[in-house]
Amino acid sequence: MKLSKQNLQPATEKIYDTIVVGGGAGGLSAGIYLQRYLLNTLIIDKGKARSFWMTELHNYLGLPPDTPGRSVLRQGKEHFLSLGGDLLDAYVDEIFDEGEIFAVRVKVGRQNSKYHTFRAKYIIAASGIIDYLPELDNMRNVYDYAGYNLHVCLICDGYEMKDKKVGVFASSAGNAEVVFPLGWFTKDITLFTQELFEVTDDLRSRLKAQGYQIEETPIEQFIGENHEMSGVELKDSRVIELETGLISMGSKYHATYLDKFDLEKQGGNLVTDKMARTSHPRIFAIGDLKVGLNQVVVAAADGALAATQIWRDIRRSTPPKTAFS
Ligand SMILES: Cc1cc2nc3c(=O)[nH]c(=O)nc-3n(C[C@H](O)[C@H](O)[C@H](O)COP(=O)(O)OP(=O)(O)OC[C@H]3O[C@@H](n4cnc5c(N)ncnc54)[C@H](O)[C@@H]3O)c2cc1C
Image (cartoon, rainbow, N blue to C red; front, top):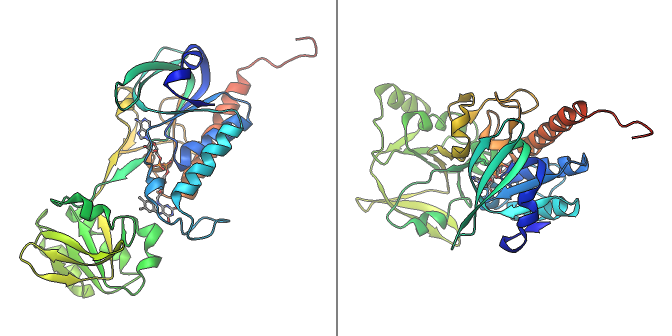
């Protein structure tokens, strides 16, 4: 059922088998599997998933390559609801371990927000990450192109950049390393540093060896029309023409609600076993939040693994039904 401020009470009184934090590709996949294992599931999602910003899902078996992320999310939510799952648009603020049960504190409503607590035996953290973008005075200008031909994911969109004149916008020497795998797809690469980091002699000579350009002057704005970026204007008024771009500025991890659990991490990503279980036996992590490949197909598969392991745990701890019980 779609939950809202008006019908929350019964949901706050029950104990769900699982609460899934995040209703993107991973969370919805987990929810569909959990409901099909006859387990009660609540998905809490604050919206605007990474999948939501995906204008075209290019590489998912069975879907046309121009499928927008939004349609995948819409269809996934309808599917989950049709199986009797509960879905709430809200923000998970904090989680408390009460022993056998988790208490999940949720902020409901953007205006006149109220906090409510929901309970579950298991948690699936499917809250993903979000990409940092170049910080320009006019952020509208960045949103006009980011996710269109100003890409954020080499694995997703390397193919789209094949043999094109690409600008790479990096925020650190580590993030700038993406130019080298990008060189598999195109040789016409300019690295824009925007004076955000020092280009070491080593990096400079490796870029030169590949014939890549470096531009260190900060950007005034992206130029183009109809969401097609065609270059950048620099702060010194020079214009550099481009055919496409790749942003590599790192990501924000959506997992502060788990901070107190001190879960094992690698960088910002949660470490899990092969069934997506974290270092806490009743907390699972899936999709972009965990160590692995940031892809829809992986997030969906992680959801299947986590749901299946939770079903096994619950089934094995439930006494078998006899003919007389
Ligand atoms: C522009 C772009 C293009 C891409 N193209 C492709 C592609 O072609 N192919 C491909 O496979 N992948 C692509 N990706 C990557 C893909 O979108 C991600 O790998 C995938 O969405 C990860 O799924 P997820 O479920 O882990 O996270 P998400 O889809 O990001 O979902 C996480 C959800 O959790 C919610 N959330 C976060 N914190 C909280 C909280 N505290 N409380 C409640 N909810 C919360 C978020 O709002 C979000 O709705 C692309 C990504 C981008 C940005």
